[in-house]
Amino acid sequence: MYHESVRRKAASLAYAFLVAVTAVTVGWAWHAGLSGQSSALSGPGGRVLRDVDVERLLRQIQEGRMSDHEALYFRRIGN
Image (cartoon, rainbow, N blue to C red; front, side, top):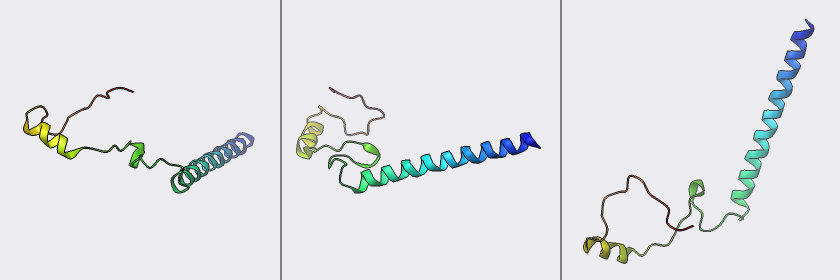
């Protein structure tokens, strides 16, 4: 009997802890997303959006210096 009540109490405390951590995490993410602290250049999922010179890309494709098929993977250049 004693061990059962200790287990229940431990399970209740663990559950309360997980609920509190989840609430703090969701609250922080909501605040960071709506407070304007996020960068104007960040997109969904934290991806960084960049300006693209479409004319330059099309010219490179026409010249054969760049492929027009979708990449299967990418490698970061620079930092």
